[in-house]
Image 1 (cartoon, one colour):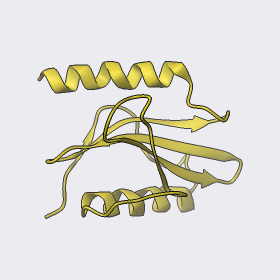
Image 2 (tube, rainbow, N blue to C red; image 1 turned 180 degrees about the horizontal axis):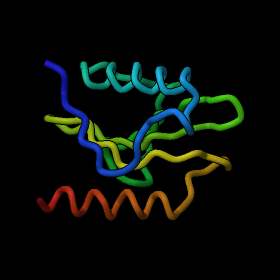
Image 3 (cartoon, rainbow, N blue to C red; image 1 turned 60 degrees about the horizontal axis):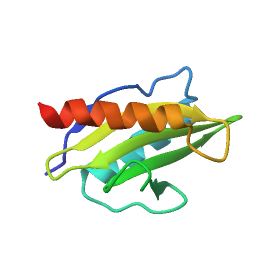
Length: 107
């Protein structure tokens, strides 16, 4: 049984994603829903946010998209969708993800 996607923030649509990048993001999210484990180059662990946190990495023409997510037993929790312009994830994104998860987990 596929895990549902719990969207806390962001969306994947064209534009700004190209149709090809949108399809790749959908394919990778479907694999996660089916319980498959993704590694590099498609997904990277994000220990700076906490355990079970990852980012999907999607290359798109001149943009590199990231989707921050957590794997829960009952869902894939999507925290943020953003274009990455530097080598490290901006502190603002990490702080936003932590805040969103705190609210999500308190419900």
